[in-house]
Amino acid sequence: TASNATPESGQLSAKKARVAVQLLPLIPNPSPSLLSLVSRAAAASASSPTLEKQSRSILKRIHTASLAEGVNDLGDHTRELALLHRSLLSICARNGNISLALRITGDIRRFAKTKRNE
Image (cartoon, rainbow, N blue to C red; front, side, top):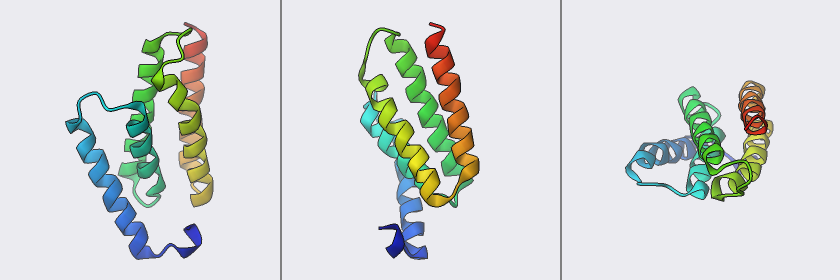
């Protein structure tokens, strides 16, 4: 739990998230759930601006794939998004990371606007 987190466990989590982000490009056609998992892991590493950027980059990748699925299709990427959006914002709240929450909210708003205009 977060209350039992130590600096060492946070560093280990950040290392695992970095490795996951580095391995992601080596996986052909990763599933939406894998992309979501890596995005959440990167966002949870609150002390790393690079991982925060990677988290948002993966989020945008899922947004793009969801748009490609079409407005009337509830494809795998689209179904994964609602859970991912809630999870990322919950992680930001737990970590007290208002800046990242605002950036993610902006990403979600841009995605929703684009989706509506299709």
